[in-house]
View 1 (cartoon, one colour):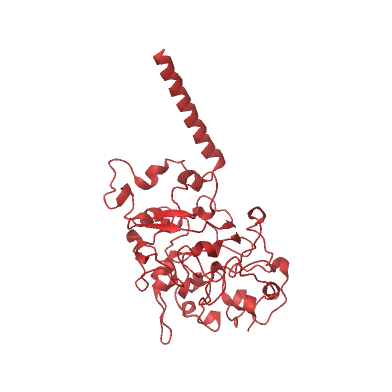
View 2 (tube, helix red, strand yellow):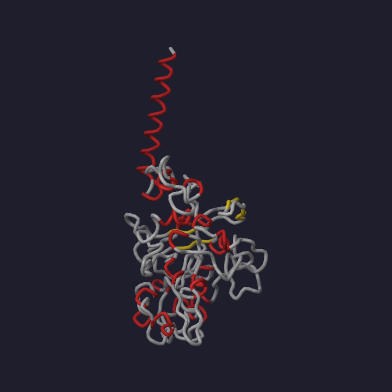
Length: 359
């Protein structure tokens, strides 16, 4: 009787395990399956008994959390490449290792993006900012910043889906063991898919389509930037384009206003559509309407860029092509493998003009 019961329990357990495995195999992508329970996922980051994990806490295979992430998400996933060729929407952490100062133009590698701490890859905290820039009230220390500050490596939202596995409302524990609260949920957005872990370059026809909540999510650390008069530009759920949508759609480049709404999308100047997430299309070339919104990522990259302030273009150069980076060995990668002249013409001014038309 006891043996029969044990056999029944064992059979039930094996059946449940098999169904769980099949569920992950059939309904998840490779990355999803890894982070949400497939592909021997625990050992992928934490190692196993007997493996060398002495250099890190929690038995991580890397020297810290970000170093562990980058064991997979470096050049293969275009997150940290050897030459800046990561042309995915978030940008390439390679730019945190480069600077382009010249007489009359000061440039610091620290200013090119989010300075994650990844000791195995030579990435260190921001040497100039002690806390995340904010309009008052921000307390997130630069020494805490790692990949898992923004992304949840365990995918605890499964089976629901948070865009890019971004952390949502709740407490996180940073690398110093200090808890930090995110009051705002992850944004509504849809991006194109990679293949085999590789992410092809972002283009006007293949990009992230943003719905709502991106700026509010950024303000979990960059406190006050969605509602402060001290901030240089409105961003967030109330930053409607209104009449500027028509200017965006007609603007092609400096001096060229022959564009149309059906082909106006410019991946260097994205926006939030303010529509239901199910209607977002990462392959749409359609421009904004009056209810579309400006967001933080309209002007900035989420990870890093070749330019100061993680800008999508050089905010300090009157003509985009005059940025010092285009006179460097990195020039071929600086504009996502494109050329300023080929895309906009030699005399293209700031892409602020896509909405404001002051050129």
